[in-house]
Length: 249
Image (cartoon, rainbow, N blue to C red):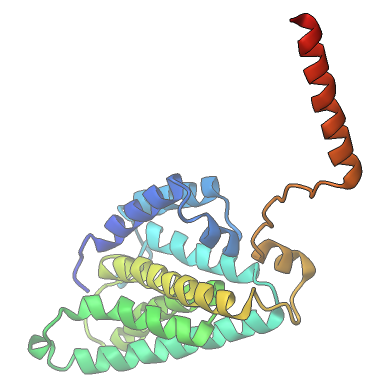
C-alpha cells in the first residue's frame, strides 16, 4: 500500500471538531471523553511515525496498533453481548469484503479510475456499518477488517515464499485504518441519528437502563405554569408597590 497523508489529515480535522464540541454526541456513544479522545488522537499521530520491526518480514506501526487498541476498548464497552457478537461477525464480513476487493483491484489496478488505496477504507467503512450497525460495532468492524488485510498479506508472503515486508498498521494501511473507522462511525451517526429521530428515540429493548439514559437527549427545562395563588400574590405585590410609590411622591 502506498503511503498518503489522508489519515493524518482526517485525525487533525476530527481533533478540531472535538475541541469545538461538535463530536460530543459521537464520543458519548463510544464511551470516550473529549480529553481522552484528544489524547488518543495525539498518541496515534505521534505513533504513526514510529515503526517497530518484529522480524525480517513484519514491522508494526505504533499509531496503527493504538488505533486497533481503541477499537478493542470500544467494543469491550458495548452495551450488550449481542452487540459484541455482531461486531465480531461484522469484522469477519468486512475482512472478507476487503480480501475480495484486494483480489479484484490487485489484478489490473491500472485500469481503475481511482487508486485502490482509496477504495479499501470506503469498502471497510460501508461494510463495517452495514454489518455492525451500531457506532461501536461499525468502528470495530472497519478497523479490524483492515488489520485482517495486513495479516492476510503476511500469511500469503509466508506461504508463497515471496520476499517482502508487511507493515502491520503502517504505511498505507495506517491511513486505511483511520479512514475506515471514521467513515464507519460517520455513517452510523448520520443514519443512526435519522432513525432515532424517526422512531422517537433510541431502542430500549434488552439494553441496560444506564445506557438508555445516556443515549437519550436531556429534556429541556420548562418554566412552571402559574397557579391561582401565585397570580394573586403577584397582583398583591403590584398593588402594594403602586401604593408605596404614591406615598413616596
